[in-house]
Length: 116
Image (cartoon, rainbow, N blue to C red; front, side):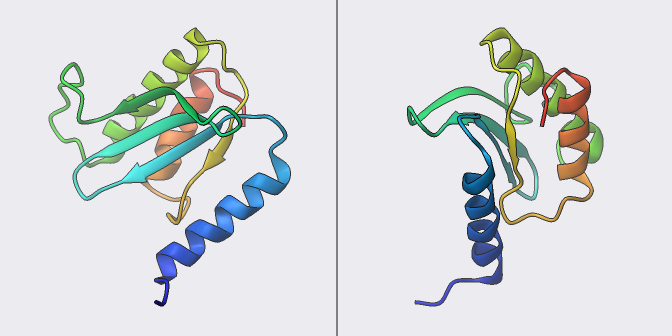
């Protein structure tokens, strides 16, 4: 079975992350057509430390598919991760290009206090 180009980019990005991340949790991004989902994952323990999305009940965002919504998710994940004691993470963009909503989420998470 052949992999799609997206799957190949995702595998390449994760491989590079595993080479450089020494004991840091991974900030993983999933972008659908309508929503953004982000998780802080501790791969050593195999658990999700914190998560945030535009699909939450308390989000109440008028348009959940634009860069402004991604910024609010970035701020949420930063405060939730900091409350759990996670300050340094590795950014896993998956197979997505670092542009637009993905970049807005990353910039907002940095402004919120996460280091990557």
